[in-house]
Amino acid sequence: MLDRENWGAKTGSGGPASKEWQNVDRRERLRKLALETVDLSKDPYFMQNYLGQFECKLCFTVHLSEANYLAHTQGKRHQQNLKKRSFQQAKDQAATLAPAKRTQIKKTFKIGRPGYRLTKQRDPATKQYSLLIEIQYPEIKEGIQPRYRVMSAYEHPSDDVKKDYQYLLFAAEPYETIAFKVPKLEIERSEGQPYSHMNDETKTFTFFITFKNPAPAEAKT
Image (tube, rainbow, N blue to C red; front, side, top):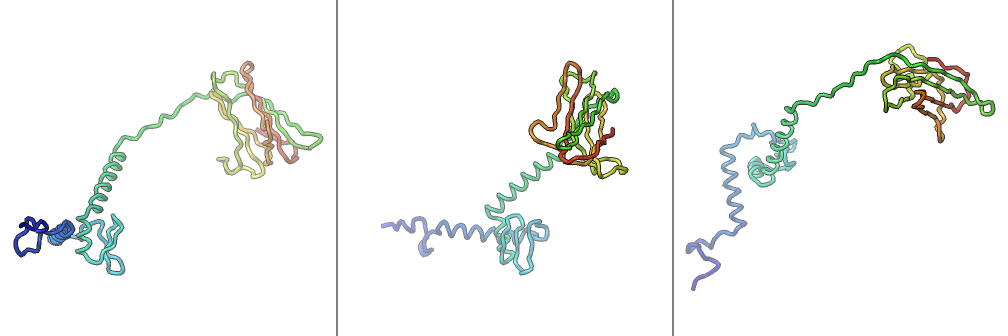
């Protein structure tokens, strides 16, 4: 009667090798082959640390000997990481070689400064200082809304500026940007403050701003 456990094995061989032992034998053969053919000095991921151990910089693993490291390089984990690294490098190279998209700078012909009227005000009760600015934009393009912002003295391109002032900038195509120099005070930002409105019929932009602290009535363009 045949012994099923030793099916296919030669007499005296101790039975066929298990799958686990087959894998061990395969790794050993690959390790010996790698030792004969691989030059570790040319492996970019091979590194010996200060403890005398060997590290794989690709997989972040530590090995006790060069042979163990070589066996690791033939394993599934290392091979998969090599494929991932190769794919990422190819992707980065393609992105580098791809022609950069040029950003077209919109050029607008300026027609000069707009006309304006500046009114300085002071609340007799609170002593708060406020400004009413009306700017005329008769040639403003349809659909364009004037924009404004507050610029500090530190942002000003000129070195000859006083640190006690800040600047109100107003811009609208196709006019040049204009600025008003005002005292460096905290701006009232309660509901409805600062107030701005563009009258499409008269082409007048109205801007009203109030400062929290009282200050001398001074504003220059």
